[in-house]
Image (tube, rainbow, N blue to C red):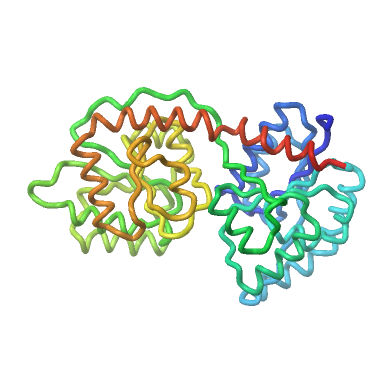
Amino acid sequence: MNKNKILVFIGGSYVSGLEVVTLHLISELKREGYSVRCIVNGWNDGMIIKELQKMEVPFDEAKLGWLYLTKPRWTIDSLVHLPGAYLKCRKILKEFNPDIVHFCNYASVILLAPLLKNEACVYNLQEPHGPNGKNLFIYRLLNRRIKIFTAVSRYIEQVLLDLRIPKDKIRLIYNGVPVVECPPGRTPADIFVFGIIGQVVPWKGHTTLVDAVHLLKGPAARPFLVKIFGNDKTAYAAALRDHIRATGTEAFFSWEGFVREQDSIYSQVDAVIVPSLSGEPCSLTILESMMRGKALIVSDRGGNPELIEDKKTGLIFKADDPAQLAGCISSFLERAPSTLPMGEKAHEKALDSFTEYKMAAAYTAIYADIAN
């Protein structure tokens, strides 16, 4: 396929993991000479648009919503804007005439299905959709329009199989992040600093971490600090603060709030903890930490064990098990210098397997195979 036209639908209303990965892909496609155009969710906070403008990628906004049984106002808003969004997308498809249409959420595919009869469509799944009646119905419809489904881990590959997507239509493509030169380890300090990075929500496992720290505290405890990076103004963050106070572990935690600059985050920590309770498809926090030479402690949920080599680039513990997590933290503290080689190996693994270049190369190979 000539390096010509890719139309990318970005369905998120704000920049989270899926949107970050999609923007990485768009950036690499543009760098390689592909003509990329985007259709952005009309309900957005402006950050996606700023990133596309920075990359000089043309885009249009379309209010393609969805039908929500528990949110009638959202449903009404979606229905009101659907005709205009549908006509706008039809016009763009006709004028741009893409070789490939790349989707990241099922709503856009379902709503635009009548326009996609002759389009070469790729669908990237980054969520563990369960095989319930609703999702089985949705993915049966998707299967009629999508030529290739991409899974970001073997865990998500199995999710697609459970949703009855044929195996020959599934491709495994891990997320990719920009290459970063591995910085030297932090200058030794009085205490070892761990970081927990990302959304401050129950399924991220913050409570398990607090309980693990509670098991380690005491007169003989080795000094260490856990820096919490993420929005600390939510109801859950308030409840987590209460839990930290109740366990008497305040001295071990530092709230850093939301920090956008990644280098600022990683320059402050010696290692990163990802104690996820639910299935992480392909954690960007893990990949970004590896790329910056940080050893990790991660739970065994979702795609986490696919990214980390236990005892080589980090440690893996059983999710929701504070005692196991406490043991991993203790191991890091007892052998603090040995975490530097772990971080170096993590960086090597990221360069080998998890770059945005490798991710884009896998997608362009698919595009070439299915383009009209």
